[in-house]
Amino acid sequence: MHDLIALTALGGADPETCTIGSVTCSEVPDVALASVAARLGREGETHSALAALIGQKAPGIGQFSGQTLIAFWAGPEQWIVEAPFESHEGLAELVKDGTKDAASVSEQTDAWARFDLEGPDVQSVLELLCNLDCRNLATGGAARTSIHHLVCFLLRRSTDFFSIYAPRSSAQSLQHAIVTAMKSAL
Amino acid sequence: MIIQHPLLGPRDSSEFVYLGDASLIDRPDWQAENAAETFYDYAYLRDNPAGENRELWFHEGGDRSWLVVTRNTVTHEISKVELACDVARMRGRSK
Image 1 (cartoon, rainbow over the protein chains, first blue to last red):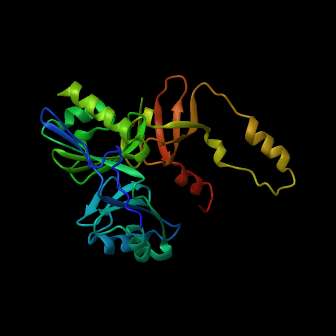
Image 2: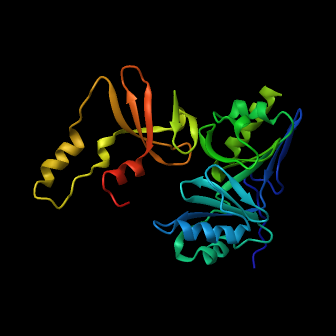
Image 3: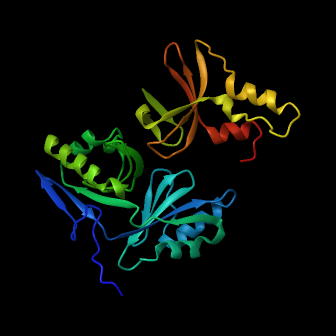
């Protein structure tokens, strides 16, 4: 067995954190992801299977819900399921077992890099980063929008706490954009 | 320019890309007798009205849905935005 060292999306052995003013941007590598797309005519079954997985109603348009397993809306009849990597490394398999042939599931772990933005002035940073009206995105809301020419998912987990998912191969570009916006805004 | 996405509400037009005329939804039958002629029309011939146009837009920087946007090319006013799948179904398509 090879003894390989896991690297984060930014290339370090440990996740990077950056605090400017009251806002902290942290890289979050320990998440497992899987995408779910309901097949034509099987939307109802997919909704129930998702609900059984996350323990709550399948999230509607622009929403996310769940506890340990979280599902967020990614598009019409499409979701991404997120879980802690430590306990759910085989998340896609688990989701596929739940949805059976009602939905198409694909492994997304390590396809995305997650950054958490937290702090009282987080809105001033987001204003510079994206066109989305983040002040009107309620807690529990999820949106897909463009940040720095990258298509990202944005989740509002609480009043001052947002998560951003960007394509992993563009992690450094996004981090650069976030830190630049933080320096300008704060 | 703001596009009123039927599912997501107002979104900046920079999140969208333009494909072309909404008549592209009506792809001709490739097995028909006159397929060559109808595909020639379908691929090359367009009206170019100064005024209201129905166009296909893709929400690339968003939820990846296809929209039919009714836009006035003289005033740039957007009067209607529909999901392209709804429009296609209204025209009798099954998917």
